[in-house]
Structures are given as structure tokens and as C-alpha cells.
Image (cartoon, one colour):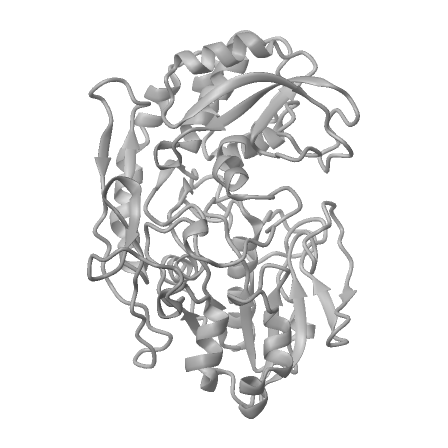
Length: 458
């Protein structure tokens, strides 16, 4: 669904996609029945028969790809030496680690699964590190080395580490935003599998922001770089392919998009979830929320992350080092009352803005550590109407208007995150943020239409 304008009377246009298609683990192995679609207007979730969705009904709870693999598709890894790419987010519906399940769960043991390698993305195996150059670790329960895929930038599993591997399995939580480096790990793992002739299984997980909304601008193709990463390469793991900032896909669906659009020969199998529907937010799945990164404590931060992540490439704090990162922004020079008022006057849907002060404590971005700074808090009032990319565009416009002399933006970093240099230039030049975003709508609508062929869920 694409929403246009910022909620001026009579100007909001809603278009719900009727994505169709069932998910298959292999060509004819596993068909997933989906349930739990939200009711009209974002009301109570309904099952496929139009009855209220009850998460207490175990048959209708969402089951992640790891559970489906062990229950129904274990033959895909039976008797094979498995390399698992995962971190703290790789858990089943009971919070049990995918590492442990593939290592010693009776279903895996009966099938002769041999877990031989572990790989972890940015933030490390436990998801607690907020630095570059993460070294290898050791998993205490299995004794296996966890090979880091995050050095100076996101890397692929090295060829030298895949010589004794029969299948690569990926189990990582996406957050529905193009800039998330775990998506880069999926692509690079697919490329590693392609290079070595090793099959790749992606264990699917929910898009926390639901799969019903697509927003922002497509990443400019001049900025996109899906090349295989090398130690001296210029890849970054997040500016990969022209998709919208908020793409509306699951990790498995994104893998299918990469496979088709990049014409990859990887032997890819997506193990779909059971009972997930496109309109479901993460807190409707009954799955445990595990912080995908140190600065992603809850679903609100995940929702607003697309709005503020471009400001990583600026002298504006995005709330790292506080208990609510990506729900606020600030700087010592900020006239918070003025900026908050200016943003509220725009009438952005689903949110309000409130001036405050906050103190980042040892933030990973090293911005204003230990200093009390003026800030603006973004208060979500109706998440179904929140449009993060429009919020981010409006904030840049407001800051440039009020603080043109103090605001510093790194053009390349901003553009790769938000997606377009022309957009940045227009906003900083005073162009109406709503009009700037509206110009991207034809491309977003075209993407939505084309992306349906990669959908695994209704």
C-alpha cells in the first residue's frame, strides 16, 4: 500500500495491493496456509475465514522458517554439513536458538544434520557490538568458532571457510528497511553459494513493519552496488539494489528478488513462515522480539528508523546512547521548539513532534556523548498512517530552513541511505518535502506491482 500526501483534507490516497500466491519451500514440497490478516482499517486481525484471529490458538500462531524447516523440510539439510549465518535474532517461537536446534535438536539429529560452521553479521553473534572491525568469536554451547562477516564493512563468507560445507543456511531478522546490512549478508551469502556451487536456504521471518506498506524513493541505480564484497572493495552491505526505503518484503522475498533481478544462478530455497500475513505487524505474530541491533529496542524504533537513519551521515544525533534511539533527534545548536512547531505544522500523518532535551551516553556514533542537548521527540499516534520517509524528508527540510549554517550533511552517506542526491538537494534548497516525495510515487507503484511476483504470503 502506498500513501500519498501528508494528510491534508481529502488528499490522502490509499491503495491496497491484493498480492497473491502461496509459499513453497521447494517446487512441490511445502505449501503454507496463511492466517491472521488484519481487518479493515487496521482493526482486529482476522483469519482466512473472516473470524477474529486468536494468537492463543497454537495452530494459527506464526512459525518462523527454522520451525518449518525442522518440522516439514528437514530433508533439505539431512545428512549435510551446514554452515549457519545467524545471530541473536535466529530463534524459534519459543526463543530457542537456531544454532542449538540445528546442533542437537532430536529432529536434526535423526536426520544426520551436521552443523560445522557459524557466521555472524554486523553487531556480532550476540548483537551487542556497535563497532567496526568485529573479530571472530566462539559459541559457548557448541564450541564452534563464529566467523565475523563485519570487518570495515559487511563481508561474504570466505571461500576458504566453505570447503567442508554442503549447504548454507541464513536465519536473520530484517526490519523492513533498505539500509539494513543483514540484507546485504543475505545477498553476499547467495553470491558465495553461487561461486562455490553450494545451495543456500533462507529461513524466513516477519517484516516487523508489516508487508502492506511501501514508501520512500527507490535507491538511485547510480548509487546501488550489489557487487561481491572484497576486503578492499567499496561495498557497504546496504546500498545494494533499487528498492524503496521501506520495501514491504520479508527477507526471503528479498532473496527471491535478488535471485531474479540480478540473474543469479544460486540454488536458492526460501523456507517460508507458517501463518504470517502481509498486514501483520511484529507484535501481532506472538513471536519474541529480540533486539536486532543494540539500537533497536522495540517496534517503535524500527518503524521510525527509516526516517532518521539518513541522519547518521550528519552532525545530528539520532538518539543513539539513549533508551529510545531513532525516536528522537537533536544537536547542541538545535532550536527544538521552532523545529518541532514547523514539523507539526506540516500535518504529517500518524505522528506529532515534541521538543525535549536528552543526553547520549557512550553512543556508537560518538555524537555528543555525555552532553545534554536540545532535541525533538517523534511521538507515534497511529502507526498505520506513519510514513517514515516523509518524516525524514520533512526533518531535513526543517533543519535546513532553521539551521542552514549549523547543519552538516555528508552527501554520499545521506544519499545512499535516503536513496537520491536530487532529493537531498531539493529539500536543502527549500522544496516542499511532500512534493519531493510525491514525485517518486510512479516508481514506487511500479516497484509494488513488479514485487508481487516475489511474494510468498497473501
